[in-house]
Length: 119
Image (cartoon, rainbow, N blue to C red; front, side):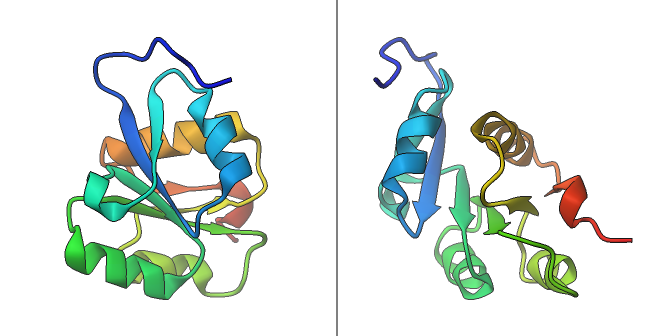
């Protein structure tokens, strides 16, 4: 059940591609509102490929974009940050940790999951 009492200012988050199950779980966070389109002016977007980072930032440069991945690939962190991403997070990590990464990214912090940081 979605949270009905949200703070006056919720963090608008876009999931690209849409992930209904994750949207429900994130929607349970009292300060996160999942939006379905970039026209809703999300503050943070969670994407799964690097091309989406560039495309989203071209149209919405104020949006902080996090790249979600299932595992560390050589050079992925550097490529994501070079594309303008605000960080790299685990796709299947705990929802609470993902929400915290989104909050940190929204404040301007670069967020890289320690499991993806590499040596």
